[in-house]
Image (cartoon, rainbow, N blue to C red; front, side, top):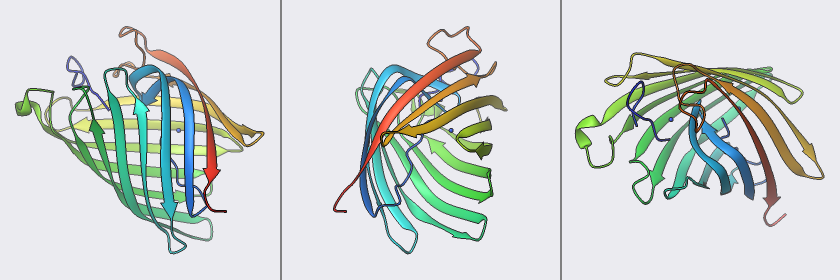
Length: 216
């Protein structure tokens, strides 16, 4: 989730989702790993493992190659639905190897109705590698809409110290063919580094992934 100082500290982004199967694994590849409007790495492999109980409790882990090391995410929480309304509450931790970045810890809240969704993350960051004085608290808010595979997301970052706000938009399309998931997306932001080219305001990313039910 590395952020860079300058404008931001020197991050459907593609996030892990819990399978309907009680225990599932997933593997995939991203042409560009862009998370919440911020470029992480190009040509990134990923994999994860998820467990969901019938009660709505879930726990999982997800990892991705970020070039200068490995990102490993740990998350757990509870989700449910009532008619067309859905809700969730949980925790996510982002951890890195080889000094790519330091640790992030988040409280995650989400609500949805029909194709609309609102996700809020309230988190803390341990600061730049080797400089704990830059540690900071932040809030990330994302409003999205999805219809038959097409989706659009508007997101906003608010760091207490680094910046007031930083915004981005993402529009994409996802589909499944032969039990393999494909997604293509356009990410736009004049506030965040959406591309390996730090002067670019737009980036196109493509991903392919496969989910595998375990013990079914």
